[in-house]
Image (spheres, rainbow, N blue to C red):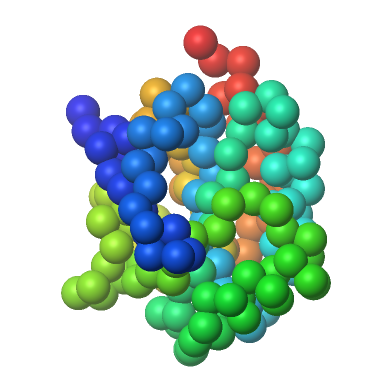
Length: 161
C-alpha cells in the first residue's frame, strides 16, 4: 500500500519538501482559504497544534483558491493574514489545486484514500485529513466540522505504536 511519505510538496518559497520528513508523526492535513466562511477554523487548528505538537501531531496547511477565489493571490499576504488574525504557527505550504486537472498529487492521493460523502473529490475549503504515524490516511473530515471534534481520534493516533 502506498503511503503519504512517497510524496513531496512545495513550500511557500517554492522549494520541495518530502513528506517523509514527517515519518512517525500523525498528520492533520487541511486545504485552507483566507476568505472562506470557515476561516475561523484556523484558530481551532492552531489550538490543536499547540495542544498536541509536543506529543507528535503535525498540522499542515495548504492554501487553495479552487472555490470562489477565496484565497489571496500572493502567498505572503496569505501568511500574514493567518499569522496576524489567527496566530498560525503550524506549517503552511504553497498554494495548491485540490481538485480538477491540475490537482496536486498530495490531494489526489488523499482523496483516493478517503472518499468523501457522495463524491471522491474535495467539495470545499477546510476539508481535513488525518494520517497515522505510518503514513496511511485514516479519516476524512467535512469542511463544516470543527477541527476540535477530532481530538479523540488525534489522541488515539498519538498513542498508537
